[in-house]
Image (tube, rainbow, N blue to C red; front, side, top):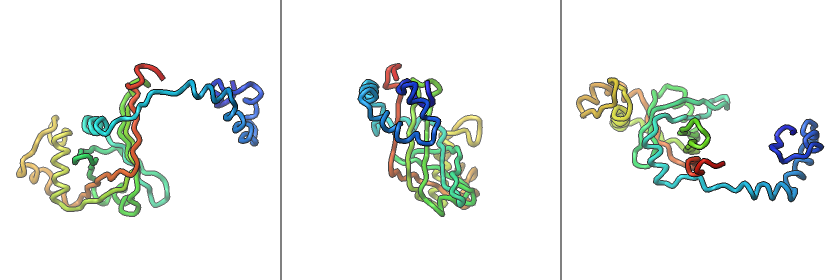
Length: 199
C-alpha cells in the first residue's frame, strides 16, 4: 500500500506519491467514482457537542491548553488552570508572563480542553478566540477565589474562601496579574462517546 493511501490508492497510483508531480494524479484519484462511494460509506454520526454539553464539559475539566502567538510568529503553548464565568472561560497569569505579553500584542489565540485516552472516549472543545484582558485587582482576586474553590491552591484540597481569607492568600498578587476572558470567535467540538464504539 502506498504512503497515505489508506486503502484508496491502486499500486500504480501509490508509486506516484513519491514524485514531485503528486498533485494532479492525487486530485484525479480523489474525485474518482470509487473514492466517492468509499467516502459516502464512511459518513459518521454527528459528534459535535450542544452548548449545554460544552458548558458541562468545560465546567468539570481542569486543564486548559492556551496557544498565543509570540513576537517571532511561533505559537507559545502553555497549560493553565481556569474557571467558568457564566459561559466564558477565564484564567489568570502574571502580567509580565509571556502569554500575557503575547496577548497584549495580539489578542487572537486558541484554547483547547480535551480528554480521553481511548479513541472511543475522546472529547474536546477548541476555541479560536479574542482575549479580553482584565487588570482590575478586584476582578483578578475574584478569579483567584474561583480557582481556589476548584483547585488545591492553598491546601491539599480545593476550598471556598471568604473575603478576608481570599485577600490574605492572594491580595498581594492581584495587582501583578491579568485575568484573561476567552471571547469565542469559532468553537469546534467533538465527543467520540456518541459513536457508540464505532468509527
